[in-house]
Amino acid sequence: MSAFDKDYYQIMQVDEMAESVVIAAAYKALAAKYHPDRNTSADATRRMQALNEAYEVLSDPHKRADYDRQRLPRRNGQANDASQPAMPAQTALADARLRERFERIAQRIREVQEKSLQQIQTVQERSAQQIRDIQERAAQQVKEVQDRAAQQIREIQQRTAEQIRSIQEGL
Image (cartoon, rainbow, N blue to C red; front, side):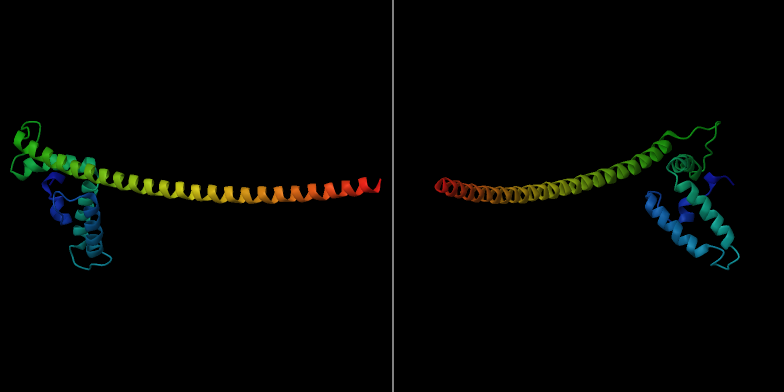
C-alpha cells in the first residue's frame, strides 16, 4: 500500500483544508493518546506509526502538496501513473484547494504584517513623545543652569565692582 492509498487526513482526524497549526495540534493530541508508552492496546504501535507517517507528510508543505495532487485521482478510483494522467478537473480541484490554502496563508501573513506595522507605529509614536519630553526637560535644565550661571556672574561682577570702588577710595 503506497502513501497515496492512505488517507492521512483521516488518520490525523483533520479536515483536508486544515492549516499547519491545526495539524500540529491534532498530532500532539493523538500522539499523547496512542503512544505505546501510554496506550497498552495491541494496535497502539501501529496507530502511532501511521500517525507519524501522516504527520511527516502533512506537516511539510511540499510533501503535502504532492500528496494532495496524487491523492485526489486515487480517491476517485483512478491510478495516477505515467500510463494514465490525472483528470484535468481533479487536478484543477486539487490546485484550487492548494490556491485556497495559499490565499488563507497569504491573508494571515497580511494580517500579521498589518498588526506588526501598527505596533511599530505605536512604539515609534511613544518613542517620539518620550524624546520630546526628554528634550523639553533638558532644555528646562539648561535654562536653569544658564540662569544660575548668569546670576553668579552678576554677583561676581557686583563684588568685583565693590572691591574696585573700595580700592579706588583707598587710594
